[in-house]
Length: 204
Image 1 (cartoon, rainbow, N blue to C red):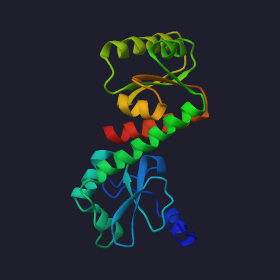
Image 2: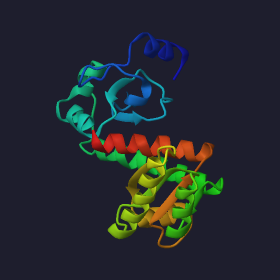
Image 3: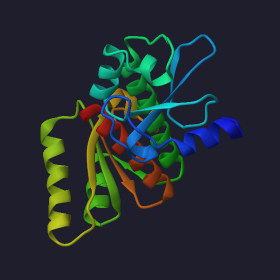
Image 4: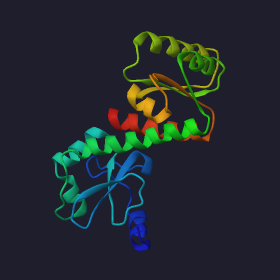
């Protein structure tokens, strides 16, 4: 984004082209049109070109595609893939998995039901991640540990299941990883930001 384009974006409030609601950059997704007139998501808000904004929710992005809101937003004909909503999900998921891997390299991830349980009960855990295909019994036991910690006045713990066990295996370099605790640290906080954004996108 050059200086003129940056000034343009800053002078025009971030307003969703579907809902017409304004919000901060974290609550919206920026899109640009490439030289061929194709709409491209700019999740890191660094791509050149004047952008338009859509609320960071899958249903809202899908509505923008269906109602041709991007052409209205750019004030010219642009092409949009019907799979744009799914593409953004994949990009956000990849970003979150990358953050999970970075947190492991920083020594801020614990895996294995016993070690995860210990980390939760010790009050070290910022987030408890279950594989989406984890066994319900294991999920229930660890979630119970979180509830017990919070009931005793411990800090709240994010509980989420954004990835499959296969995805967690690849990100963490292990086998059959179904539970992971992100313990306190900068890399863990960066992971949480990405997981929360991914969850909100999928749920909105």
